[in-house]
Length: 261
Image (cartoon, rainbow, N blue to C red; front, side, top):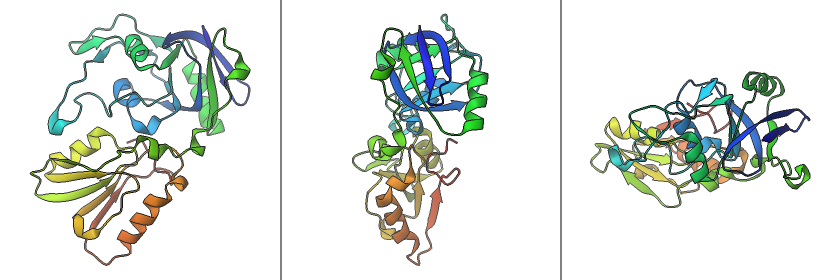
């Protein structure tokens, strides 16, 4: 058993699955009926306790990681799970799908990520929508509550944590060149650009930019507070101040870099 405790004092009791550990972070929700492998590996959910509102989760298991087009993972949005925990209504313990290689419970154990089931996710989601940003902590029974403080991940530069460390090129044969600033990019964003004929160079969040190097610039979405990404902001500001016929593409939601398309 385990308990989800919100910073406003609300508690949700449930059954623990996945890794047996206590964690803290920001509570968020997603309403998709499918796509939990993609959501969990989305860097935008870095250090967040992800709530899925669909009542039954894990029914098609988790596929084996395979290399697909352009050398990108065929099934996942990054190389690992970035969410701090998974909160759901009910876990399917007998997954059935042709691509299933393991259960969701097994995958979370392998990745060291705790899960909590048996939670009224509708009630939790309504509270998140009404209160806005909420911090929370998942406490496994037997762990002193005071030993796990509320952690606000927005105080850290999460973009720096998830961004690629060195530039990397995808689809070398592309007919035009797009530079992507990796603030927490998903593999499918790279794939979509490459499928449309672009040679895609993904660079770190703080990489210097020169309009002579690309035909278009894409600034990815990502986690955390964009105010901590001053290096990115200043580099993009220099580019858009140059009078060049270049395309500037970006993802943004509610004035934050962490939109989740």
